[in-house]
Amino acid sequence: MTFKPDFFLASLGDVLPAALINLQLALLAFLLAVAGGTALTLVRALKIRPVNWVIGVVISFIRGTPLMIQIFLFFYALPAAGIDLGPMTAGVLAIAFNSAVFITEIQRGSLAAIDPGQIEAAIALGLGSRPIWGRVVLPQLFRRILPMLVSEATVVIKGTALLSIITVVEMMRVAQRVGSANFSPFEPMVAAALGFLAINLVLSAAAQRLERRYASQRA
Amino acid sequence: MTHDPPPALRVQGLTLRYGSVRALDELYFDVAPGEVVALVGPSGCGKTSLLRCLTWLQQPTGGLIEIAGAPLGQERLPSGAIRRQSRRHIDRLRHRIGLVFQSLNLWPHLTARENVELPQRVVLGRSRTDARVRADAILDRLRVLELAEKVPGQLSGGQKQRVAIARALAMDPALMLFDEPTSSLDAELIQEVLSVLRGLAESGTTMLVVTHEIGFARHVAHRLLFMDQGRIVADGPPAQVIDHDPHPRVREFFDTVLAFRA
Ligand SMILES: Nc1ncnc2c1ncn2[C@@H]1O[C@H](COP(=O)(O)OP(=O)(O)O)[C@@H](O)[C@H]1O
Ligand SMILES: [Mg+2]
Image (cartoon, rainbow over all chains, first blue to last red; front, side):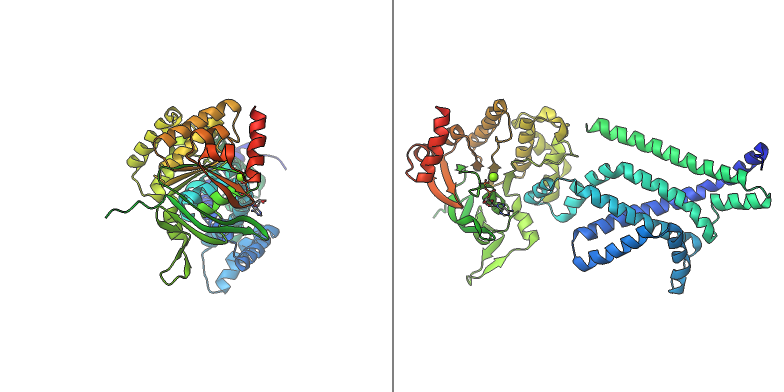
């Protein structure tokens, strides 16, 4: 197998524009995941036993099975249950659900590191649970977990490649098409890899700047 | 006909048990508006437990608490039955008692000014401008206005102490509670904080101060409560209790402390 530079350049032109689809899907999935994961964290903090037991079972299922299978389940099983979603919606929901579980686990870990004295101070001053979460706990929590959230975001971005298996036309799917049409899968695949890499590099550079800003602001 | 104002704090039969431990054993006392009360007693006698009950962070096993005439936590109905208040109701009363924790417990992600503004905005519904004006006035009075933009991690122990005091004072409490305000400070900072407390006392702030500083108790407080094993065993003018109270636990405590200073 030889690497054909001109075919590679041509593939870049075909494959990279589809990165926009991955970006959009990932952004949507990640926002849903952050909201859903935080909601799960809030519910779990209520410490209602049976509820937390159910959440625990769901968490271990999501953590213990491949994302690819979860995507298939959302795509094939939900319509069977009467909920018919297009491949894009099903795929975004599957990734969001998976990521929400990882985010709530990250949050739970960092929640334990917040000094309970601060919360007592808030209670003693008369703050209700809403402002305690919204103004005292969550802002600190998100600042603490920022690096882990960023790495979760890269997982989500890479995860969108899996949506090719349920017919979503994104970068990976385009690369496969270009590859099989030209009987040369290698070059377009490298092009897609570069697309994902570029997105993730930009993301982590942005995150580093953000972290440095926090660090210098609130040393 | 005129009525006396209600006491800033009224405690009737306050009891707290942890299992079989009686952390607070049927306490009865009032604190008058403007009064400065030193609360003294050996470690483990229940001082922190008392302050936690007075803010309802710890629900007492029994007894009644009134803040400036308003029952806190539970109230006696005309029928004589005791009714527990809702969390919302309690939250609305809590700012009437300003507690300065031993560990201060400032919010580390907010600046000093934001620490003082947040509860005013959220609990009292003050506007951004009003909260800021009030915060700055109090920070200025406590001589930490120039640190308003700093976060707690950038402040010294004494500075944090003042911000924590400001946060509670900004809520216009009927009573301020301090839990060993000098215990975590270096020797030179102790005097600084004591002078802040003296300033508050002189401006008429009602205070209940848990302290081991005999000088503060003697010279600033109007009254000294001595606790032992969950009970108040002495209650009187500070000098009187420190020098002459006959209770053996009181004598043991102060004679030891005074012997060390001599
Ligand atoms: N959360 C708790 N659980 C069980 N016992 C406690 C708890 N908090 C305090 N106590 C006990 O209650 C008593 C009073 O404690 P505390 O109020 O902290 O005393 P002080 O502040 O005077 O040192 C002590 O015997 C202590 O061991
Ligand atoms: Mg204590």
